[in-house]
Image 1 (cartoon, one colour):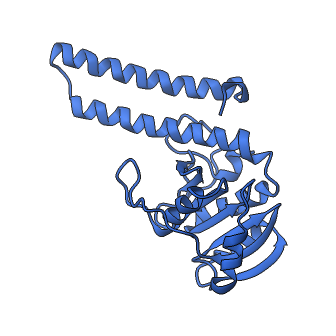
Image 2: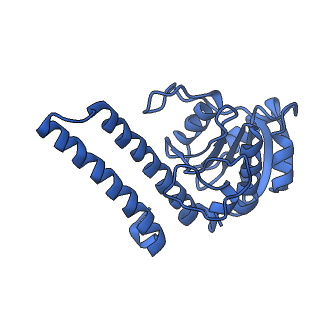
Length: 233
């Protein structure tokens, strides 16, 4: 994501978060000079703020790079929002320049051919727990769901950079992204968090699903964020 793609509001949110990290860093430096304060507590605060910054930047990257340019992405993000809110896991691979044909062919033995326009309702149905296809991946090409229930190659990576264990869906997402330029969306059943995976990198989107409805006074710099379909508009 280049700065030219960011409007003034997005730049301000990122600048505010960076300044907050800078202030916390100065507190640590002062604590070292004066031998006062809880060093470990302050360092943990910086780590948490950095994770928030990463999630916020990932959200803006998704907005500026994918939402308006990928066919069917609005329906896909609406589905991802609902799936996340309900705690239903999902794995969606969107073909880009690199062909996913070999994975579609392989899906004939593990999943099923769909051949329908990508819609939120159809995606929600596919990933509904109990559906025979819900544990596999959906492959989308030119706004159409080609196949569902697909098995993707697993990454050898088992942990995130933060040391958290990766689930099978996220390992499959990384595995495919290491081989192709596909855009992959993963929803965690356990945390309900949404991640965008591309080029072998997992980007958590800065969105936490709200259990009590939508907060209309959205503040992207806060820890709790609005549902995905609202923040991506």
